[in-house]
Length: 247
Image (cartoon, rainbow, N blue to C red):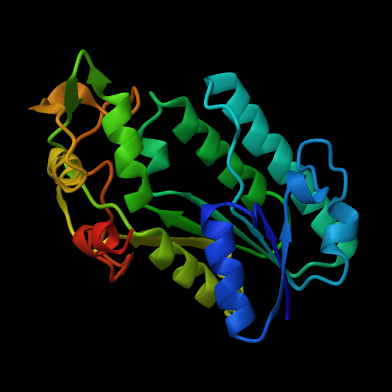
């Protein structure tokens, strides 16, 4: 099976291509650095020729509210139109668990808009909604830092390893489109501040951790249900400690 991974040179894309090739698939990366521009559409027709499945793991270069919305809607529309022309039978994309419950964050609104484009495209699809990646905890600590203090919410958090995301995508590629959503979370549910504390300790970081329920998540108000999965979700196998120890 030919699988084109859009964003295939990034974190999840590289992991996914390795898994797909290991399973015997013809896995091809498509990215701007390889001459495929999802915003202008340049190179999409050539990249998708003969593809059975397209997996979108792209990310916006800017997280400004207007920029990220424009990126995900434009790039997704261009991809599905090129897929129709190429006869692609399955579009797979990664979005975020419970994105619709955090309208205060522009990135979440953009991911919801991306899902809508996919759902209305007419292309058979599978949307993998994942919780935040283990790899993002460092960035969460950085966003919450000011004057040597790292202020982090105590709301429940359930991050998942990028390797588990890639493994789930590799499995979904081989299955028929579900024309719906598959949810994925990590194996641990603890306060976000616990994960950040673990990161700071593991990296011998001297920043002072301040637990603050109202700190939110990148500008969004959250509670214990915002960044955790519901019943029926798939659960990854890699703990945060295993992730840090393997870095």
